[in-house]
Image (cartoon, rainbow, N blue to C red; front, side, top):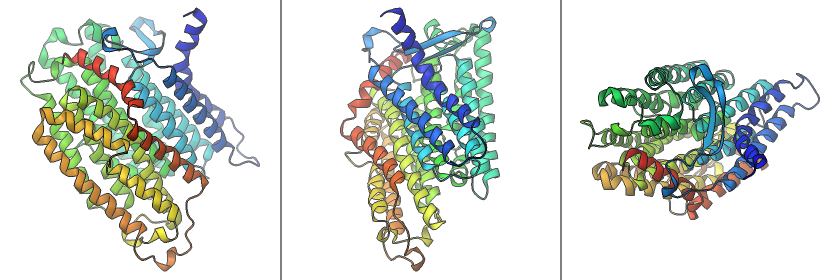
Length: 510
């Protein structure tokens, strides 16, 4: 590889990360008034679409390296000294764990911009915050320096707080404050552990920390367990894991549709990503039964099972469409924890794949909650019914999305949950059996939601409802196509994920 091509290759990821930030600044520079009030929307669509296309090109260029080729397969690496006196670098790269998350992020933001097309309240500020948040999220999934990881993690919180607090519903201030209190306080654990890690090792470099023999190894296992748990709590709040989940339903209910799509589609995955990349990658001695008096994997499995079953029952009890989907997200993210608790190839593969599949499916679910609310101005299920008579295309699509959420064969969620069950059953058969009951519960609440909203008798006040428009149809077709293609041919993602899973298992020592 010549020098020119190497320079282009190493800068490519940084361009993907910071292109949305450039777009946010362009939007901020637009005139306050003008004939074309959709100019901020158009600029946001252009920058997010180009970012998505570049991420596709990056995925096509990505080369999966077999297990024997080494521990790390980070590509498109870009690094330069940032604060050399503290050994802090701008250091980014992608592997089979982060690349699917980058693809998911860039795709969901295009959908979110299109879902925001009718936004009229301060559109410049709205899209400025949205695109700034995209850069922060992409930075989280790409950072190989823990200081940079923390900065990007914190930068994501600020735009989300304002997007909920300004453009949200009746209790938007309460929901936004609850979101920032939970996530900011949890981040304090991350900061404390990262600073302690730096004073113990002298570096924030993730690869160096893994290759040197992990942080705190000289201080004994008890210190490593404390550090592991501190980071795990931070990431568990974002996931969210029971009992740290209560911020999520409030945030979802009050957030506008597009922000709910981003929140469920991407932000929850940041928590799961942190557990895999940071907790599992840096503290392998804490995992498993051979080296510890506490079986961390078992406890992760227990909390994952609680998430799955408890979340499903809570979804079943809701009277608000958005709350049904919000609690179903808690349930489905429990599968990530259950898969990780197995600490085997199938379980970890299924967990990573579940992160991607849940992101696409739950984005569609929230999109259709927005469709219904936009036309009826209510999310109360008891006030709806029979909408499919006036919205047949919306009803047909929602049935398809519901089947995907229920993990029927042929949909991507079936593959990810099946892998999780295979991996978890080998290690935690009883927890897996309990978790499997959510399949019945989930199918019940999602099909019951269909029946109560789109079927049955229609009220007189819904007689003139319009069906979904072209933008909503486009969003649906794109995301549903991804769900079906991955469901039929999961190797498109698993071929990327597999080497990263094997490398992680080598680090853990399995």
